[in-house]
Structures are given as C-alpha cells and as structure tokens.
Image (cartoon, rainbow, N blue to C red; front, side, top):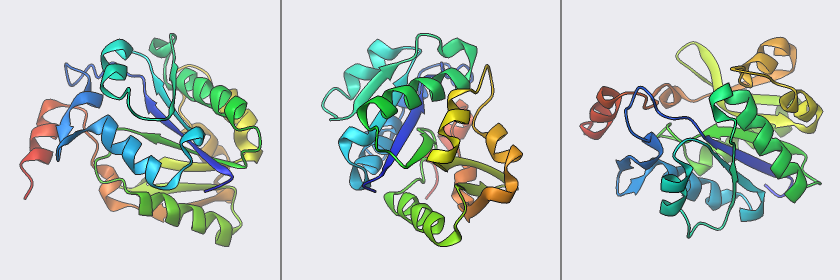
Length: 198
C-alpha cells in the first residue's frame, strides 16, 4: 500500500440512529475503532486520514491512542462532498507522492483489510483507474481512485459523494464483489439486527 492512502468518512450526525453510530460497540470495539484498526493493518498510519464533524469532541476522545491523522470538517452539514474535500486536502499535504486513494466509511461492519488489498490488486491487474465495491445492485464504498481523479474529488459539491465521479466514468471502473457491503448501520433496528446475528 506504499503509494496508496485512505480517507475514513465519519463526519455525519447519525440522525436516523439518534446517537453517534461511530461509537456503537460491535465485537468489543466501536465501529470507528474497528475501521481504523482494519486500515492500520495495511496502510501506513501517516497515510490514513479520519474526517470527523458532528460530535467530534466526543468521538475523538475515544480514539486518541490511534496514530492517524484526524481532520475536523466544520462544514459537515453541507454534505459528504465537504468531508471528501477535507480528507483529500489533508492527505495530499501529508502524502504528496500518493498515487491512489481509498474512500471508506465506518458503518460497514464486514470490511476487512483483505478486501482493501484485493481491491488494490484488482486495480493493478484491470488497468482501470477506479475500483469500487459492488453490492445490492449498486456500486459504492469502499472505492479506490487513482491520481487521475483527485482533482474531481476535490471539486465535488454539496450532498454529492464520490458516486457521481463513478457514474460519469463507468468505462474506467472495475467492480469488486462485496456482498456484505450492503450491511450498513443507519438505524437502531439495523444495529439490533447486526448484534443478534449468530
């Protein structure tokens, strides 16, 4: 992963959950600790940027021992684009030689380091500049973008996530099957369902 960084998006206010979902416990760790530890398995700590926004004081206190970069997006209410921009700006500063960048979230409990590794391998073998996870008939995160798309990521606005760039460049996209990526935790019932799975 030497030329690849990762942005972990965790700035939202979890409005449907009613409390910060970043801090929900699953298998002995918060969701946020799980994704950070997963990222640390394969990325250089200096190449990991966590973007926080809502409740950032409460959330950052839980992960103060994690050796990664934390960026606060004061503009988080404007939508995901501002968080992607905050992450890209910070990561490009810490890691100017970066050739590829993953964008990921903290509420997909089945994400693994192996998934990131396989997506990176697929990018190298497919000769496509974007590799995205595929689940539930959609293309989504985690998503890996080559340097070619960094400028477009920086120019996203409002509620737009990276999906806009994916949809506009489908001829340059390779997808990676990640069925369990469809499991993301937005509501108390999602969380209870996850906890009660065998």
